[in-house]
Length: 222
Image 1 (cartoon, rainbow, N blue to C red):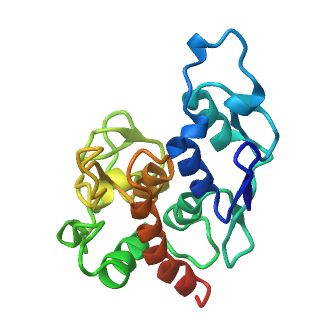
Image 2 (cartoon, rainbow, N blue to C red):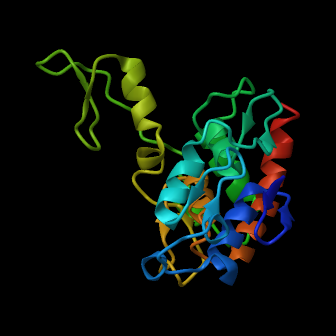
C-alpha cells in the first residue's frame, strides 16, 4: 500500500503510485520559477519520507530505497518492491522452484498472452544457442555470439542463456504504446520495468500485470 499525502490518496501497488506522480497536475511544477519549494510540491518517497524536486532523482531513489514497501511476494517467501523484480527473480533462476528464463518465455507467450499483445511468440526460441566448451589459446571459454571470454563453462552457460542471447539476440517483448515508439525488450521483466516507470499509458501496465498473475500463480504450484 502506498499513500500520497498531498492528494490524500491511497494506492494498492507502488507502480500505481509512481504513475499517479507522473500524471497528476498536483505534482507538475517548474522548480526554477519558485524561490521557495514547499514539501507538498515535491515528490515523496512513502517508504522513507524523503522529498525530491526532480522526477529523475525521485525514480532513482525509489528503485534503490532500502525501506521500500514490499508489495509482491513469491511462493518461496522472497519479497519484492516491484512486480518486475519478482519476474526477474524467476528469470535469473534464483527461485527454489527452478523456474527460469526459458519457462517464463514459454509460459507467458503460450498461455498468458497467446494473442501476442506484448510478446512476439515467433521470436521465442525453442532451441537456444549451445555454447562451445572448447578453450581458446588463452585458456578461456568464449561466446561464439559476441566473442566475450569466460573462465569456467558455468559462466559461459549462464551468459549464453541470458536474455540478450537466449532467443538468438531477438527482442521478443514489445510495448504496444506509440509514446515510446513500441520499444522492444529481451525479457518480460525489462518490459514490465519499462511500464512501471509510467512513461507509457497506465492501462498497459495494468493489462500486463493481469496477464502475469497466471505466471506467478503457476510458480506457486511447482
